[in-house]
Length: 80
Image 1 (cartoon, helix red, strand yellow):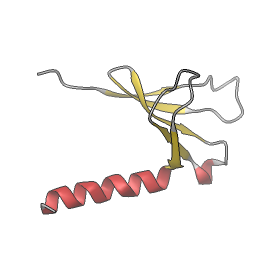
Image 2 (cartoon, one colour):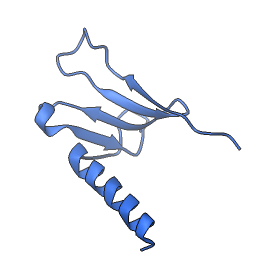
Image 3 (cartoon, rainbow, N blue to C red):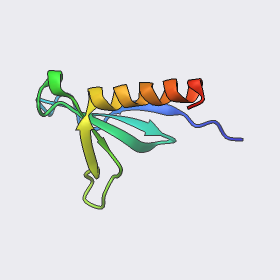
């Protein structure tokens, strides 16, 4: 069985953009892209892609995504 590897990578060059973007890659494919276009207090997670034009299909506040993932773990551990 192959073990998947998560990796964090810049998807925009830090020195070329005022607001760089980071990605979480799974086996070298983007799973989540996080951007700070609305400021570091309002980070956005982009999911479900990339589309043919390079954009991710869905956007959600990063904090909401993190909270949902934590709730999933709690529910699974509780057997619900």
